[in-house]
Length: 153
Image 1 (spheres, rainbow, N blue to C red):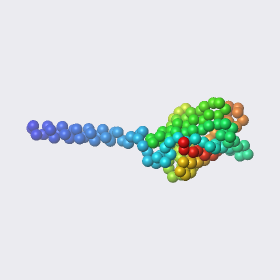
Image 2 (cartoon, rainbow, N blue to C red):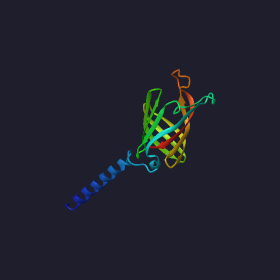
Image 3 (spheres, helix red, strand yellow):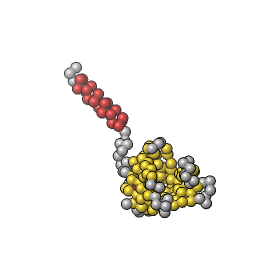
Image 4 (cartoon, rainbow, N blue to C red):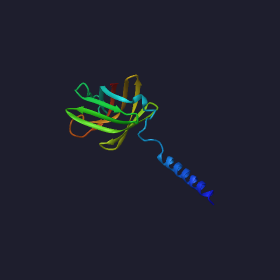
């Protein structure tokens, strides 16, 4: 009987260790290899928004004094800050990459998901995707497309 107890205890420990490791899964804030090329600080040199309702209405917010910066961490977490007309807008979430699509999973200030087609060449990143912008400054954003060119800082 004495010989059985250690085996049972070892099996129990092995089972508990296996269950604990399985429950842990992958590290949600650990490095994501698909994100590696995007990690760092980015600053927009061009941020053009074009109205979907009237494609003739198009603005380059950078030309109008805006700044747009993005910080991407190895885990895929990002912080994006747009400063336009002396007002800051901060967005926090995670990114994922599949093929030539970069998807933003925003958690703050509200949950949403948006996707952009991207082109990455060295320290230059271009994003093209749908967005919203208040073209007539009435407090209601309208559907738009954005073309953003960023340089790694």
